[in-house]
Image 1 (tube, rainbow, N blue to C red):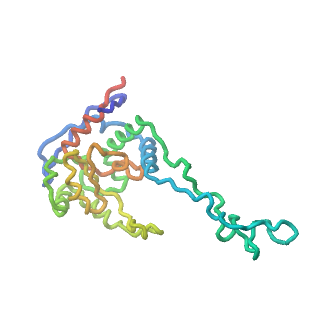
Image 2 (image 1 turned 90 degrees about the horizontal axis):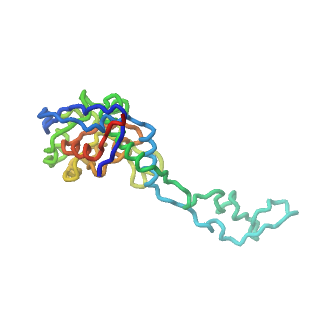
Image 3 (image 1 turned 90 degrees about the vertical axis):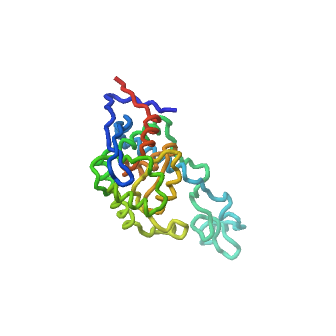
Amino acid sequence: MAHRLVVLNVKEGLKVPVLSIKGRKVGEVELPKVFNYPVRKDLIRRAFLSAETARKQPKGRDPLAGMRRVGESWGINHSVARVPRLDNGRAVMAPMTRGGRLAHPPRVEKKIHELINKKERVRAIASALAATADAKLVRRRGHVFSRDVLPVVVTDSIEKIAKTSEAREFLKKLGLWSDVERAARRTRIRAGKGKMRGRRYITPKSVLVVVSPTQRDVVKVFRNLPGVDVVSTDMLSVMHLAPGGEPGRLTVFTKKAIHEIGQKFEVVSGE
């Protein structure tokens, strides 16, 4: 089902070159009108926070944590604080005591998922797609590349790539390999306890490759490259197009993916 988006003064889609695996121009394709959608950073940020908080797992404390003791307050006239105590005088249960309860523990009923309207989420994805065609926004996000025209559109023969070494050569021919090297240089060890919990390294986001649902096998080819992600058009979200809520990710589309995006987002004039 296509999402209908109404925009004032709709511009015709721009034509961008279609590149082969070797980086040569083999044709042109007209971008869907969704790539001319206004870039709404507020909507993108809101949709990102909604998707990010949806991944959080609710957690809480045992209601009786720190309270399974037999302490009793001694009352007044003992020259000690009136907190529950054991027979030997040790204070228990109170928040400031050893082994006592927490003053304000986390609760499972806390609302941590920021909800968003469906139409807002769709417009946020359309806005993030439009940001991928703006070279200024892409460079402002920190990406390094040598191309003048964005987004990068390649032929569907990308699915023939069977090795990571071939994927590396493919990105070099497109002039995007310098951004992967940037992600590799900036890979660093995480500060804190997270490095003991299976997330030791932090790697910046690099190139995003958008393919059609029939080309999901290329995920295995690109996943070893630092910061490179592969996503199909049916799974495309703000989390891929605008990591951290910042629009303008360096993106490579296949020709078939461009066609499917045009069918998914219908932009009409509101005049």
